[in-house]
Image (cartoon, rainbow, N blue to C red; front, side, top):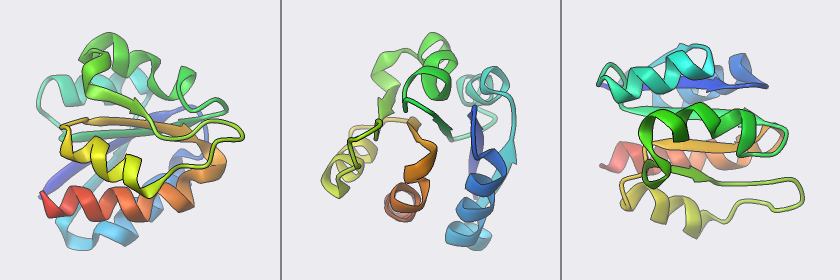
Length: 120
């Protein structure tokens, strides 16, 4: 079972619901504050962190970057920059474990992201 924590600043409940729908019985999803979510990944209590904010990187990833290092984190979208499937696929392949994006892109990103995570 893959443990995914939802942090960030916006759309937390909607993101968690969609992650659960997409991952089904293969994922366990928790909603936490951004610091709690990032710490869960750092301590091995969770496998992946996803979070949204208005910029895709600030409130979505700042605590994850601080606790997990920038090497483990990636901003998948920003205002005016729609995510590309190839970038999402590559981020998972590279071993990124924390994913930030804007709240208005979660329905585009999550189907690709969860599919790729489940392949691992």
